[in-house]
Image (cartoon, rainbow, N blue to C red):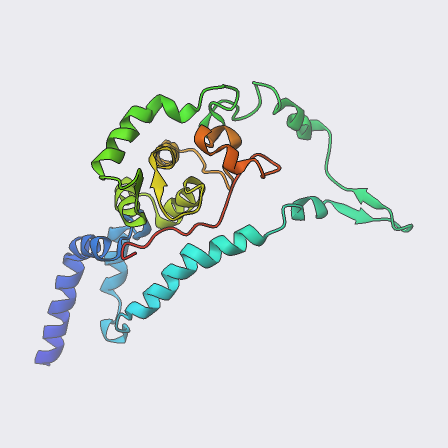
Length: 249
């Protein structure tokens, strides 16, 4: 009986200090606050949980999951054929001729409207600056450059560890930050120069403002200094497979 009372007391203490435990995990494992569950719901669930059935933490398993999210998922996404969606809209008739089954007419004519300045989302979010000659990121560049210098770059670049420590301050989920990293590390060297860092912060601000992050980087968001490196992209966009950095790298 005394041991049971002691366990229940310890359980209540852990539940009460759950917010402190979350903060500790954020610092130790570089987890963004947005990746944690709602603390009140978590406390309610833990009240009815049997702590004796919880498995001990295995750091190796955490590393495997982290590697999967950072590398394997990005690699799989890069392997998805671009033509897959087009193929799904086509069938073959009795003579073997391919027929386009895409729905047209009515509301689907919005595709034509999208090519005008009045199309849905035009000039907003990631599309902002698409019809301008100036790199849209330049408008906020002075703030990003100050942050970049505070990180004490070496040879004009910051390491992946420095970048991650800065990026998690946005409190966005790691899945989102990983996507932003992949889009921003244009030369895929695992580091960020001033242009790439500015781009990363611009994308972070877009997400914080409620806009979606693109699967591929539109050409108008590619830094002017990187356009030559991206001339081989037929669609003028880049997605790459650079991995979101770990804090211990």
